[in-house]
Image 1 (cartoon, rainbow, N blue to C red):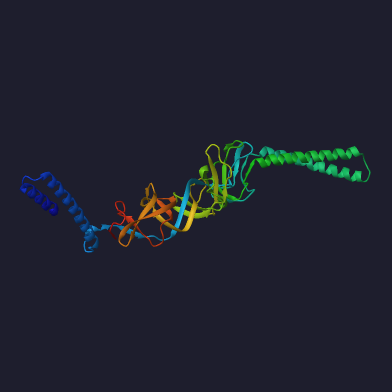
Image 2 (image 1 turned 60 degrees about the horizontal axis):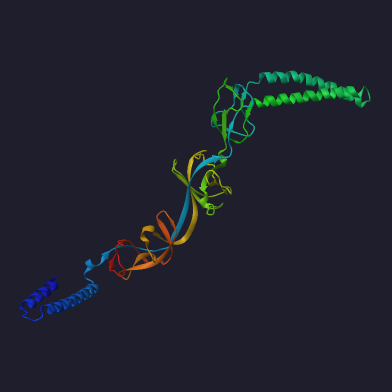
Length: 365
């Protein structure tokens, strides 16, 4: 500023002192000389600033981070739920009043255990009456068979006794089946989860009254978009988050469906669970399926990668100056991107103050 002021004063004085000469030509010459002087002054100032290490205010303050390999994973996140293959609601096969309830909620049961019974008095009476006739038919048949074996009596007598016995046996089997239909039995090993009946209550065929669940065969089921059909396969790592119980486990996918649901455009995945009691059927779960993994990735925040028509670049610190490094980014997840080309281990990446930096600008960190 001071130099420019002196030049202007000098020019004004020369112009004022000029006589009848060509003032315009002289003024143009002085302006040209002044412009050349300004350029030389600016150049000298820049050179002095670059060589003056005591003037920290000329350097831009930044924050850097040393680039180092790390584990990088990208995930496909889907909603899931806990499901039990052996989760059954049981009902009586015949209608009638409940006469016995043999279990309560929380009881462990095995296959075939009778959980409850409905009124079967008439069937039992019928079985008792038929049993008398069947006992007599068995005696008659045995006697006729003994006689027939000795060639005594006629064949028709033997066949009639045999037919009578077999007919009564079939009727007895039918009554036994009807009696069995009045008994609600457990088809699985498990735990009684619900008993929704009371003594004397009338039930109808097919009306669920008792639930039994096997907690040893729980699994997580989720639906994945068909866009990820080529990215998900059995054996992939998966992180399962149970938000309601604040629990997270790591496992592997056990099954991937090959069929796309035409309504939802998704396919099913399943993950087997252990027998922890805190997991319950229909519990909400979040599946984070690992779609990409690298143990030695150079990872930077996405916002540090700047883009131009020529490509992508980041700013690094190199001998106290800002330096643009052309890079190529790969997978992106959760605000971070893997750098596949350009950076190397140990580079000083500028992570704060990079927005206004220019190539070669002095920086301090």
